[in-house]
Length: 393
Ligand code: VGL
Ligand code: ZN
Image 1 (tube, rainbow, N blue to C red):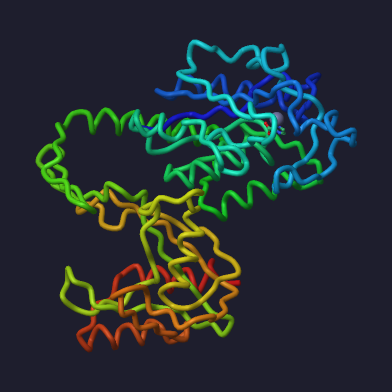
Image 2 (spheres, helix red, strand yellow):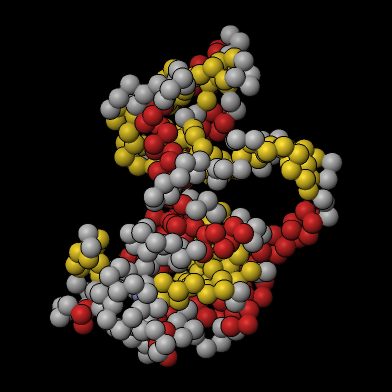
C-alpha cells in the first residue's frame, strides 16, 4: 500500500503566516485533490515550544543567520508554529477527518526537526516509520512545505527507512533563502532515488496502486518458512522468496575517469560457479544509529568489494531483481569520480576478483567470458547501456 504524507501544511507557512513560504497556498488544492485518492493519509506538524532554539529571537541574531546548535548547522527562523497557536494549526481546507495520524516534530527546544521521521541529529524518532510499516505501507508520496527543508528531509528519511519514495512536485513550494534552493533540493532528491512526478501522474499511480491492492487481496497468503535471512511465502498458488530483514538491494554502474567499467567476479553458492556481476549489496540489513541512504549503502559496497571510493553516486533506475522468484527490488546507481584507496576484495570469505573493463570493449569481453563458460548477471548489460549513455560524466 502507498500512503500520502502531507508535510507541514500549517498556517504559519502560508501567505500572511510567520514563516510564509512564497506561493505556499498553491499546494492546498493539490493536497485536497490527492487526499481522497489514498487509503492512508498522514500529516506532519512543526510543533515548537515558545523558546525553541531555532528561533532568531532566542539568540538576538537576525533571521537567516547560520549558527551551530549542539554540533549541528542551524538556520535561525522567525518564531513560528508555536504549540497550540493558530499559526501551528493545520491549514483551512485540509479535512482533519481524512488524516489517519499527525506526527509532531521540533518539540524539543534544543534540536530542530525538519524530517517527519527523525530530528536533524537522528537522535530521536517520531515513530512514523514503524507506524507506516505496521500498516503495510511500502511506498510514500510526499508533498507540502517547504521543498528545501521539511519536505527534502522527510523524503530522504523515507528512503533511508526503505520506502519507495515519490515527490509530488506541484504539491511543494520552497523557502528559497538562496535563489535555487528548491530546485537544488529536487535535484538532490532525484539523485538519491526519490521519484519526482506531478500530481496528475500521482493520481494515476495511486489509482493503479488501489487496483493492485484489490488484486493481491484476492489471494490468500501464507509464510511457509521463516529463517535467518529468508522467508518462503505463498500467495495463492505462487511461492516466492522474501528477505524479511532488509529493505532492498543496490547495484552500481561504476566507471573510472579512464572509461573503465568496474565488475566483480565471485563464487556464488546457489549456482556453484563463479559469476560476473555489478558491485552490489543489500540495504537495511544491519541496525545503524542513522539508517543509510540507498546511495550511501551502494558507495560502501563499492568500496568494500572493489577498493574504489566514489565522489558522486547518482540514481539511475530501479526494478525487480527476479520478479517471479522474489519480491526484492534493486536500485541502480551510477558511480563516478572513482579513486582506488584500498585493495577491495570484499569482507570475510567473499573472495572477490575485481575487473576493470574498457567500456568500448565491454560487450565483446562479456561475450567471450560467457562463451568460456562463465556466468554473467544480465544486469551487467544494463550497466553497459547506462555507462555508455546517461551514466556518463
Ligand atoms: C520548516 C523551517 C523551519 C519547514 C520548518 O516546514 O520546511 N522550515 N521549520
Ligand atoms: Zn520549524
